[in-house]
Amino acid sequence: MYNQYRQMQRTIDLAVMREREQGDFRRHVHRQLPALHRSIQLPEGDSALHLTCFAIRYVRSVPPWLHQLHHQLAAADIDFNPVQVMIDQCLERMSGIAGERPQLHTLVPEAYLSHRVMEEINDRLQPLCGAPLLPMDPMRANLVIRGLLNEKHCEEMDSESARLGRAFMDLKLDSEMTVALILCRQRFSHDPGEWPDLAHSLEFGLLTPGAVISNDTVH
Image 1 (tube, rainbow, N blue to C red):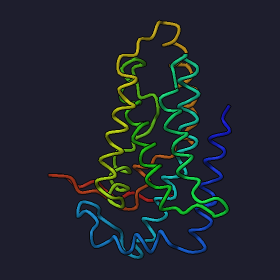
Image 2: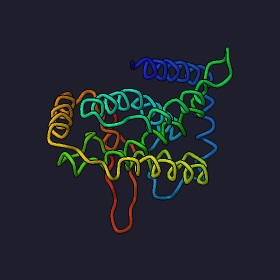
Image 3: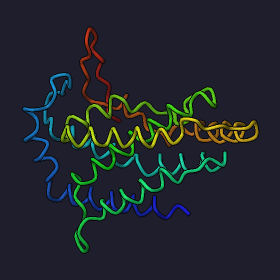
C-alpha cells in the first residue's frame, strides 16, 4: 500500500548521493545568494552549504510525513484520494530521465508543494480533533525554501495546495471517526523522532516586521 513512499525515498536518496558527488544544487544556491530575500539571515561561513544541507533535510522529511498523514486519514476513513493524485504526479516529475539519477534541484519544488499541501490539510483538520493533526511547524522552513525557488512557480504551487486543502474544508466526522483520528494522531505524536522540527533546526533566522526570529542549531 505504501510502496510509493519507499519509491519517493529511494529517489531522494539517489538525488542526495548525486548532489554529494557533483554539488550542482550547492552551486545553484551560491548563485542565488545575492537575490535571497533580505529577511533570511544566513550564518557565517559557507552559506550555500548551510542552505543545501537544510534543503536536503526538508526534502527527506516528505515521505515519512506523507506516509503518516495517509495512515491517520485512513484510520478515520477520510478520503485520501485528492492527496494521492498529487503524490502520483510528484513521483512522476521526480523520476526524471530514465537511467539517470535525479537532481536535488528538481526535488525541492516537489517537496515545497508537498509541505504546503500538508500545511493546508493540517489547518483544515485541526478544529476537528482539537490539535494539529501533524505536530509540525513548517512555515519558516517553507519561507526559506521559497527563497530558493522561482516566485511564479511558488505562487502556482500555493494555489494548488489551497485547492487541495479545500477538499477537506467541509469534512464531517462522526464521533467514531473523530476518536479514531485523535487516537492515531496521539500514537504518532508520542514518537518525536518521526517529526523533525524543521523550524527549530534552522541555522539561520528570519527577520519579520518588528521582530527577529532567533537562530537555532542544527543537530
